[in-house]
Length: 101
Image (cartoon, rainbow, N blue to C red; front, side, top):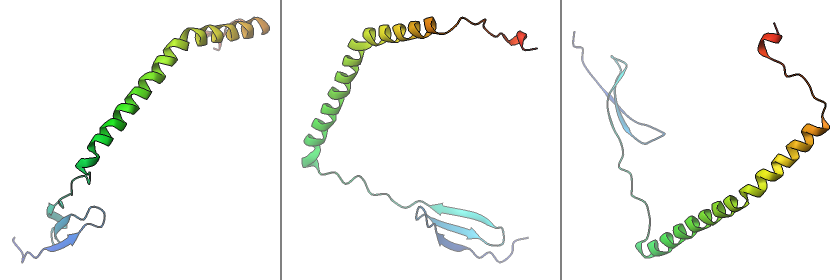
């Protein structure tokens, strides 16, 4: 059963992994994932990065706070617009599913 097993080593063009392939079995026998380098962040810039993240959080909070403050006005204006639209259109009998049969 065991033939002369020869294997081919190939480098994946996408992820640069090393693949060992057996052509007789037409299967991948093993693969080795390449070692990825860590993020290239300078520790002297870490204070600036943290300050920028804190500023972004504060901006998002401020925007959500302002949206919550305006929420009542927005909802009342939407209600008024919907009421005007409902008063300007003629009253129609709603179409029900079993009316279509």
